[in-house]
Length: 617
Image (cartoon, rainbow, N blue to C red; front, top):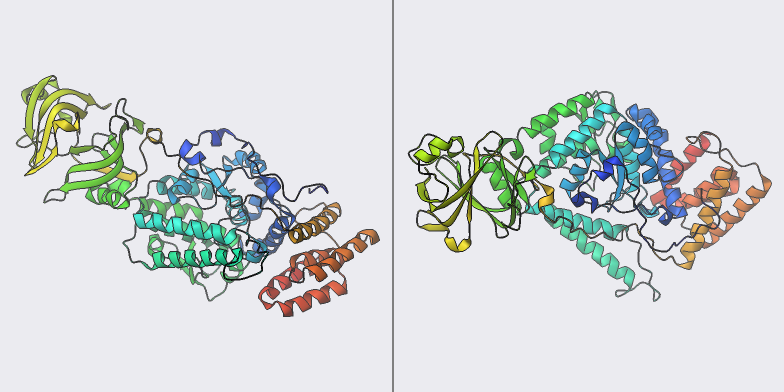
């Protein structure tokens, strides 16, 4: 409920985030993206935008959405009439084993996926402006809260979402992917920021024109990056799967599909468009991973899964193609190309996390040597190996791999007698050569074994490592820690142990923060607030049903007075006159709305949709 003394421009501040068991489990590098919802920042206009979209969507989606959608709205505590409180939702989501957090608009793809793996739904708390009521490029609470949240009431789908996050968080992105992410994030923030006021009016150097110029430049940058031809990365392929299922998925049969994708559930226009014959319906398969999409246009085709269980089958099929399961030189090359923090796991279970910069392969494409640059950490079973964090390996890590020359037994399989036979004595100098030709000479200090008893790390001092005519390591570089293993069995994005690195570097944007209103905006929001209070005081018992026409002469007179102010001072506003008509059903306001449809044809269909909802009651 909005109270009459509710401030329209509250003081800027950060509220304490209400937590729960699921949120407490989140690592710091994910918590950095969480921001308070700051519910008091939502304006009465924001609330009306939410209500219009939800009423329009729910009316139509009751016929075409998957059966769990309307049940999910109730289970997740999402109201048709007001923007949901994130942390009120949490108390209800807890019953189905999930949680929700408000996040800072666009977040990196791997972080988004990792939240899902923790069974936490990320919801952008910002809401689209009235002029973007049908669609916004920025994630907002309509898309996330009204699209993603309700459908997880289906247990099969909720598990698919969790598993998708678990696998997607390991997908390796390219440097190009991160460029696109940064460019799209910048564009989305610019587009959703209110247009700056200009006391001098519009002009080439006015704040509003400068802002529009920034948007144009950002759009050009995004377009240039999207048109650049690059090899598809793992994250781009799994993003396609995400798009065609989680965002734009349909379930059932090609002849009679139902909607479950959040992009369709939260869009006024696309939920209707997608059901038309012009949109091709294709049986869902792994081929969807190789079908790109254009976020700026209606989708020409959509994929239909027979049920939510089949989504899991395709996901596992795709996961079998990923470096996290295949490893090898292809996996490592993806990490090198990404230029981002990643991890390889060697056959002994030793995990090396860092920014990979180089590898050497033999004629059989086996990796015989690798390097990282900068801070690196070693781990075993996702836990940092004591003494082998970024302090010890501040300048990178390098190591040969494979078998020793002329010895059939792999180093990791050598017991104490085998090591003694080949002169591996702690505290004694040793010299040996790998099959690859890499030569190691130094003082053997000690070795470290895994839980199976296999050697996975050997420390040397006064060590020199060479390959052909190249010196790979010298005593001046310090101690040489050599990874032991025949091959790389896995490669994935991120650190093995996230606590090894300081990954908290995200700066929260001001998107969604309260903005000082002009006098005109304050007055307009005040009028919206008055109408909302009247409607809520007159509401029926069923929150899914719109209120009946108001019969109170006093309220009717008040509403007509508000309408006269709107029509005189805000002739382009269409949503509030529609809300007033809903409560009064007067011919004067109906005639005004019809005239407004002619005067503003770009929003005529929205007025028509609103009138259709009203006249159904």
